[in-house]
Structure formats: structure tokens, C-alpha cells
Amino acid sequence: MADVSERRFVVQHHRASSDHYDLRFEVDGVLVSWAVPKGPTLDPQVRRSAFKVPDHPLEYLDFEGVIPSAQYGAGDVVVWDRGTWRPHRTDDPAAAIAGGSLHADVQGEKLRGRFVLVRRGGEDGNAWLLLHKHDADAVPGWRPEDHPLSVLSGRSSDQVRADPDREWHSDLPASEASIPLRWPEVAQDDLDALDALGGGGTWEVFGRRLKVTNLDKELFPANAERPAATKRDLLRYTAQVAPTVVPYLAGRALNMHRYPDGVGRKGFWHKEVPDHAPDWLDRWDNPDADPGETQTYVVANEPASVVWAANFGALEWHPWTSRTGRPDRPTYALVDIDPGERTSWDDILVLARLHRTAFEHLGLVARPKVTGRRGVQIWVPVVVGPGFEETRSWVEILSRTVGAAVPELVSWRWQVSDRKGLARLDYTQNAVNKTLVAPYSPRAAAGAPVSMPIDWDELDDPELRPDRWTIRTAVPRLRERGDLFRRVLDSPQRLPRLS
Ligand code: MN
Image (tube, rainbow, N blue to C red):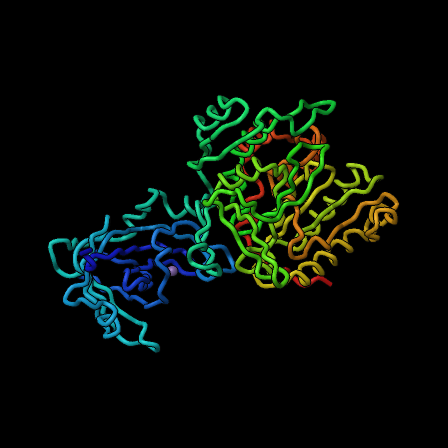
């Protein structure tokens, strides 16, 4: 029989609106939790105030990273201590806690010995005291702030805040709430194996086995400046960029723009999982499919999924702007600066800079990227809440205000034949299942261009071009500059009223 008396505990140092330590004990499938403002101590002379806070899901046990602003508990979290514990004097810790007293023998990396939690009242009975018994593990004068580093990563709270590995999204189901921001890079051995495969075979990448075919087929023709690229080139690029792209695709339905016979041949949108897809690929049934119809989408929750999509002929990756948990609630507002036939690159830059000024003026986080074709797009992270009508009309007001400054460049007519070759500021992309191409996605065009995030300052770089980066140059650029789009993942914002 399993030893059910030994359970896990964790202490997370949590710097939110106040700095505190969350002491959490595994009890009956949840983490029963107390916030301890000054932190637990081994000093038996010291009594600490502790406040009972809502139970947390077990998935939170090893969470270290940041909780984005506008979410409950926004701030940084490190796993300050963890280990196992046993209730003392009782087999039913839930009943002991309900009765206002818990004796816990803990075996952590920092904390050891017997702790006692005693309820002392408070308005909702949530005020408790925490103390350490006078036992062999007691250490007079022991202070938690002298032992600040994470037992998970060895990092300080400041280091985790500056460069977090994960985010916690409490608005998502617990199994999906811990979102990785970083994945291990593809192994050089995996890339070497791809090169050694010949025309096709079984490729093991990111620990998954994929049947890859037609590796020497040309998918992207050459253009004046750039060579052609094969399916092998596409898969190599995809594997290199997948760890960076996955956070933009995870938890979202994926629309795949497929060109199985390459650019210049027939392309089509593929929104459903094909029958031959591997079992490990995550799927999502759209609850808003027409009655009697099933729409099962691919959800690329791991790097191998993106490689699978590329091998399936998806030259472009277009994730939904909403997550599958709330498909009617966007997490980004999108500005799409879409050139007309007569629009020059300089015209696009004028429109992009005017949007830059508008976002600076509004104090909003917004990130631009070149599309890899001719345009520029700007993504604005928003809190989960407003529906698409709201983000769409917000972007319409913004873009009409911007467009009014340069009426000679912009058309508000949607038919290409009516636009007189002018640019369009396409706010209508803010709608369910309308998507823009993901950052770092290749584009189905000669020379294999990529949609590349840029710094706002780069709008003033005379070398900038909408198709400046390709599947050959995007990875060195990413290594050099880091992921410039990252803030759209961790800055959910309320859109201010525009008038
Ligand atoms: Mn907390």
C-alpha cells in the first residue's frame, strides 16, 4: 500500500502588491495555503502571522515565474522551498485545519522539523499563527531572507522577474495555467539526423517521431537575391525556431496555410486535424461549429507540433487571437497595415510610425513585426474580457484617427477595385477565427521570407524591408536580438477609451 501519510509541501516567495511567502500543504488533492508576510523561520522563539488564503491546484506546486499584471497575485514567484510533510497527531489534516490547529513535520531543503499553525480568529477566521517547535531542527536566529534563492532554479526573485521561464494564468484551467515561455533548443544531433535522412524516413525531433517525406522537394523558389529552399530547409528552420514560436501558438487553434506542392502551386487553408496525424498532437473541438458538424483543430502545444505542421505542408502558421478556453475573447488587438498596389514601403513606414506615436501617447505595450510580404502588423496584448466587437471598434477608431493624418495614403473601401491602390488599415481582422500570421512564421513566397518581430526603432533603419529576413537569416537574428515580440505574451492590458 502506498504511504498516504507523506505529502508534498512548497513555500513560494511571492512578490505581489505585498512581499510574502506562501506556505502550501498538499491535503486531499489540493494545496491548502497560508500567506506568511515575514516568511517561515526555524527560530523557535519567533511567532509569525499567517493568513489563510484560497486553496491552490496541485499544478501550482512547482510553479516558478511571473503572474502577469491584471491577474490575481500579479508579480514574481520563486519556489523558495519544497519537500514532503506528515501531519502529526492526526490522520485527517483537513479536519485538523478545520478545527484550527495543524502540526506538520516537514522535510524540505531549507525548512525541517515540526511547525505548528494555530488559528487565532480574524474576521473570517483567516488569521493564524505559525511557529517552529523547540526540536532538534530548530535554529535560533534563523531568518528566511538570509536564504533567498530558489530551490528549483537557484535563481533570485529579481532574476526570475527579469527573465521568467513560465507564466501562471489563473483564468485558464489548472492543467493549462502554467505557460512555458521557453523551451530547450533543438538538439544538434536531431538536425544532423535530418541532414542524414536522404529523401525521407523517420525523424526523431524534440523526443517525437515524425514520418518525413520529400525532403529534397523545392517548396520555395529562388528570387533575384535568394536561393530556392527545400522541405528539408523548411523543417530545419522550423525545428530551430519552434521553441520560440510555441508560446504564441500554445492553447490556441491553429489555421495552417498549406502548400504541399510548394509556392506557386495550389495552396489552401487547412483548419482540421487530418486522420493520419499522430496521437500526441493536441486537438481542440470547436464548440461553435455548425450543428451536426465537427471541427477539430490542431493546437501546437509543444515544439514537435510545429515541425509536424511544417512537414504537413503548412508553410504559414496562423494561430487564433483567442485561446481555446474562451474562443470568443481575444488576447490581442491587431493592427494590420495592408498595402495597396500603389503603396510604397515608405508609405507603410509612415503609417507604422504614426501608430507608434499613438501607442506611445496612450502608454500601451504594442509590438510591430514585418509580415515577410509587403506590410507591417502591430499586436496589442489585451486582458481576457472584451469581445471581438470591442477590440475591432477600438482598433477602427485608432486606425481611422491615424489614417486621417495621411488621407492620401489610405482607403476605407474594402474592395480591391475600389481602393485606387491605396493602403488599408484592416481592423476587421479583429474577429473570431480571423488570424494574422504568427511571429517567425515563414511566408509562402519566393526566397522563403519570414514574418519577423522588430524593435520600434527599426522603423527608422534604412535597411529595413518587409521581407528582409528569411528562413536562412531569421535564426541568427533571433539569437542576436532575442524574442522582440515577447511582451505581447506578458502584458495584458485594458484598452483605454478613445474619443
Ligand atoms: Mn501569494
